Each structure stands twice: as C-alpha cells, then as structure tokens.
Amino acid sequence: MSTHCCCEVALSGEERDMAGARATDGVLHPPKLVWRCLNVAQWMVPGAILALLPKCPVCLAAYVAIGTGVGLSVSTATYLRMLLVFLCVASLTYLAVRRVHRLIAFIFSTRGTAQ
Image (cartoon, rainbow, N blue to C red; front, side):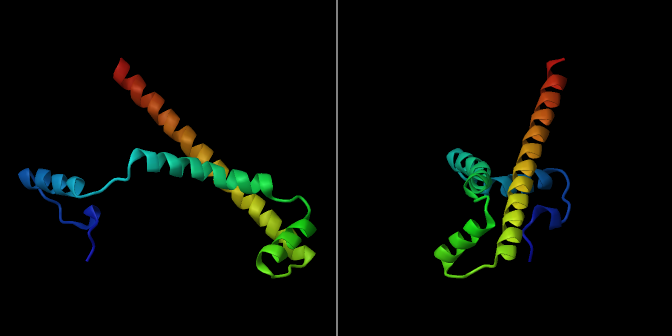
C-alpha cells in the first residue's frame, strides 16, 4: 500500500483538484529554522571533519584507539584517512554543485519573468 502521489490513479477535472488539495494539505513541513539549521549542518560536518582530520596516519590511529579502544595499523589508518578526505571533498563538491545549479535556475527563471 503506497501513499505516494505517483502511484495513484490519474484523476481528471474536479477530482484532480480535490486530490491535489488533500495531498498538500495533509503534509507537515518542518519550520524554516529547522531547514536552515540542516543546511548549515550539511556544510559544517564535512568541513569540520576536514579541518580536524590529522595529517599523520599514526595520529589518526591513536585517536581511533583512544576513542574506541580499537587499534589500527598504519596502513589501515592511511586508507581510512584517504577515504574520509575523499568522502568529505565529494560531499562538499555535491553541495556546491547543487547550490550553483539552484542559483542558475533562479537566475534564468527570474530573467524570463522580467521581460
């Protein structure tokens, strides 16, 4: 039993207007402050990890050992560090591309309405 609007049967005329009203009226949207906090957190978490990530694999292995009690070899710490750097840079790149895409879409949508 799916409640997604894409899985419902297509309605016509007045029924479609009523179905659209039900779908939008029943949805609870989080407050704008929550969305803003989530947007800031999306940027802060990978940035903080990159800033606090030690450059030395031995230091990373020591931090992991202190925090979890699990010892890592230097080669494992090296691969773990490279993985963390790659994931953080990839997520920051994704966020930047998404922001630029929204900006370009906004610019072109306002350009068409101004003329």
